Length: 320
Image: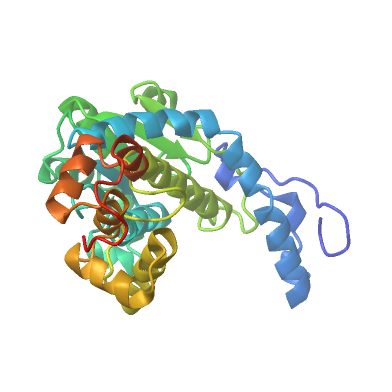
């Protein structure tokens, strides 16, 4: 609704892409006061979670494919331009500290390269040759999965990258917030189309489309990592303590789950070389680090399965 409480008449901007269409609900946002502007933006934002939830089955299909490939040593690549590319790089960059993954496992490719992360290079999205070259440079093979991210579904860089990924035999998916061209949609293995509708500022896909993209990427990597045994309950037991905050979180997790005072928890973590999962396995089974990690590997990294399969070998008082 406009500040006056009524929608404005529709204006045909001559573009059928949903993210480029006119939004009558915010047509008079330029006449609104600060609080009214925020209310209008928030009202639009509240529609995003529902649009994402409607795509849950499609996201699940991607997660199943990605988790299967990662478990066999494959990699996940996000490919995008502008906001889409930055969100892909962001999600990839957050996997190692959160889930203890190798930085090579999940990677982001953005049109225009690293410079485009901090300075907009809008023309880079039209470079089809660069899209193909990026896939070649990454050495993408049939073991990997490539997810193209394009709010409108028409970004040339992303389209070319996906076409090259398809040729390489990799698993492929396309995440859009508007119906993509059928010739591309029919070629990829998976399609996630989150219909977030016209933006509050027409065409500004860093708004609702960007929010939806962030939510979907969160879902893909988080669910995939859970499927790989990277969490215990809902605790990130494979995190890497690369900061004081994460070191403190590691200690708190070990204290709580092992029932240890902080000095004992710190000592246990030291013997586990800072690995929370190994520390908990050592304590839970009463074994040394080598044995704990060998058993974890037999259980595909799932701490819960490991602790269920092997009863504690030593009494709680044993210094293991």
